[in-house]
Image (cartoon, rainbow, N blue to C red; front, side, top):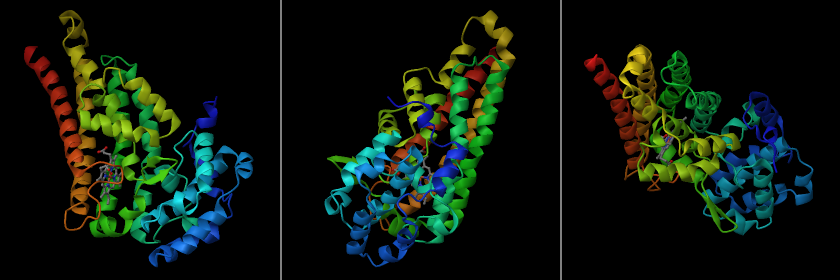
Amino acid sequence: MISDLFMDHGNPLQIERVRALDPLAADAALARLPELNSRGDVPTLTAMLRDLTPSLDAVALCSTDECLAVMRDLGMLLGSLKRHDTEPAEAVPEVVPVLLELGRRTGMIPRDTVHHYTTWNPTGERQRSYTGDPQEFCLQDSVRMVFPQLRQGLELCDMLSWTDPAEQKFAAVLDELTDLLGAMVDSIDMVVKEVGPAFFARVLRPYYENVTLAGETYLGPAAAQVPLWLIDLSVWASDHSRPEYREFLRHSIPYSLPRWRELYDSWLHAPSLVTRLVAAFGTDPAVTERSEPQLLESAEALLRLLRVIMVFRGRHLGIARKAYQEDLRLFPVGSGGASVELLKQILDLTRDNANLTRGAADGKKAAS
Ligand code: HEM
């Protein structure tokens, strides 16, 4: 049984610790990745993965932080080999039990995730990257800069799940969440400005392909693993979603952190914030009359939140459409396993839920 403390991935101190670690003494080898990748040097990449793969005995001596750093570094080679059409588990079979053990020790999937590729990746000279291109660094930074806010935001959603929409606190916490999610808009604005759709489609996207390990397929370290969908689950998606989006969430959740999987389990079958707020407007007239001003404040706050999410999703859909247009793309779907059409559907669902909230609040205003 793994303790919760053990699984507190993503706190700022732990992030700094993991970034500083180089348990495989791989700094120099991984600095060569851009050059090896640019000439598709599969024999050297294979030899590097074989040489860096630690024994299971060595893994047993690693701390949790070291296991995360080992996974981060092996992961860079998994993605690189796959980019050159080589299944890493076929080229270096001895890596498989090590990856399985690293996944078990860290409570995560047995390959690297976007957390390894961004949050736990050192910055500066030691930064691991597939290409060494500033556009790749920008994409890594764009994800790095939103994780602390989403981590905090998810805890606020947890607080909201047991806060009465008629309490003043409900609107206040929602506004705090809205401020945090402003980072998603800053992030996508930076990417739209700095990352060319063609560079993403032709150069970067192939490194985020899935790999097969012990008969299971695991997606690459995609930005789609940023858990905005988990915020959705608490705000509206637990009971106002569609099968395709529910399925995307179900597939994405194994790639997230242990604490977030706990939140997923507790929200999946619970009424969403939208549902609770709309229901509160419709309860006993005497009760709602007393709480009406506060409920209207809560609805306004919820609308402000959904608006920020829609701004992110609108701009994100724009760049996704460009990068996945038919004459540019190499892959029909994103590295998170979903299509651009799904992104449009999620944006529409977000808007539908904003309309539902607005409808309930306007109905109340008209009746009073
Ligand atoms: C060149 C830049 C980008 C492109 C082309 C792109 C493309 C896509 C695509 C096609 C999907 C569908 C799922 C999948 O990947 O299979 C997706 C999902 C997603 N992406 Fe991106 N993306 C980009 C950058 C970003 C950035 C910078 C972020 C956030 C920091 C982000 C966050 C998300 C999220 C949260 C989802 C899940 C769906 C949602 O919540 O709306 N993406 N992206």
